[in-house]
Length: 434
Image 1 (spheres, one colour):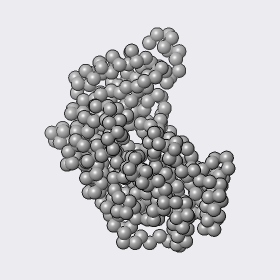
Image 2: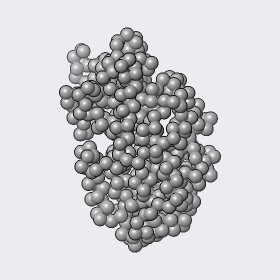
Image 3: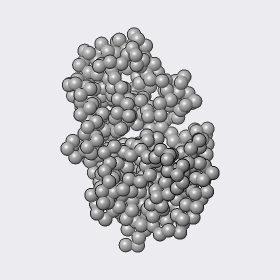
Image 4: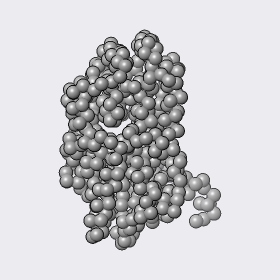
């Protein structure tokens, strides 16, 4: 390293130019082919679009094995952004992937636990713009995709033609699906959908273990990771003994988000707040972390102690929020499916359902089949549905609610991470010939 390079700030003391980085990644691919893999080295990755956040299924699996002396856990970060609360130990290392040391360590890992895909989990931003990612030899490893949720929207192979072409523009990302040893799913119905979405993945490689991150919804509070306990207490402070209604609208494609995001008027906000006061409730707003659409509320005029934001910088996981919620409002976000795991009442504010179904992402399931609560297509219907949900002293799921819940959840406990790790150990043993 030259003196000039040594004086660069840490995030820049990396592969700083594309003309250096691209040849290095080509050489790394050769190295990755030649180096033997260690099946006791499990690679975890931070969230590809939430820098420095080690969350969801990856974090839940890590928590399941963090004290296992037979496994060396390597958590790869980028840009020098370390996950808060993640401590190194003799069996756990936090490594900057975008350094020669990080790339060397990745080349030795025999198990890859992806959160999205190699092209996203391993993407490296070049100084001056652009990005690329290592292309690991997947057939030499055990590779499991810990996809974050149960999709309600059409994705990848089931997306509309334009979005499918956009999503598959990275040919390696499309080809890698056939090499996954496992893809997490929550139920038999979800497994069929995931197999179709991730085509050409063989359906036999979809593992119906349940989603590991749902353990955070059901496990004892004392067993939660420390960071989630802190977030849980923060939610309790915000709701201050009142009932929390979570409003979580879904992601909208950038091409339509600016024109298709719902904005509550001043009159609608006043009526909504009166309803909340009557039921001693508050509304917590959590947008999608890819915030293409404007906020549904005017921050200066509408947000206060009755309506407030629960955004991703302050609350990394949805679990602490759902654990404190009394009801959930969404449009087409699968956050409502997480709410079913806790048997919470759900309402869909589907004000643009025809446009969304026909011209945006589209729906994988018919709402009448997959959504067990009221579907409100305008503000008046939303108020009626929310009033009804808050008027009941307790939520007693009816037969339709229970049917939908069974459709999405094969397991009804906090053992999803344990089942996933058991399947993963079987795959490792089979690859190792044991």
